[in-house]
Amino acid sequence: MGKRKPFISVIIIVFNESKNIAQCLSRVRNQQYPKNKIEIILVDDDSTDNTVEIASKYRVKTIRSGFRNCERAKSIGIQHAKGELLLFLDADVFLVK
Image (tube, rainbow, N blue to C red; front, side):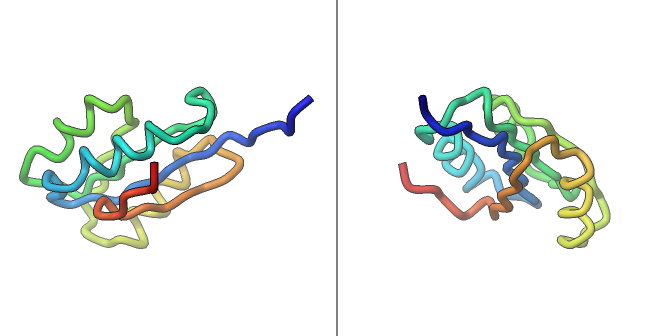
C-alpha cells in the first residue's frame, strides 16, 4: 500500500504572460502526480494580451484580481485554494518533466 498523496493547489499569478503560460501549464499538467490531486489557480491581474485565453485550454480556475499587487493576488489565490499543500509559481517557471 502506497502513501496517501496530498491534494495540491498550484497558484500562478499572471499579467501579460502569453509567451510563457502555455509551457508553464503544460509542465504542471505533465507531472507524474495524480491529475485528480492537482488544481491550478490562475490569478490574472488584468492581462491585456491573450494569457487567460491560452490558460483556459489547460483546465485552470481563473480568478481576476485587478489590484496589480502580487502579494494581494497570492492572497486571493489562497482564498480559492482547496489544496492541503500550496505551490506558488511564476508563469516563467517551468517544472522539470
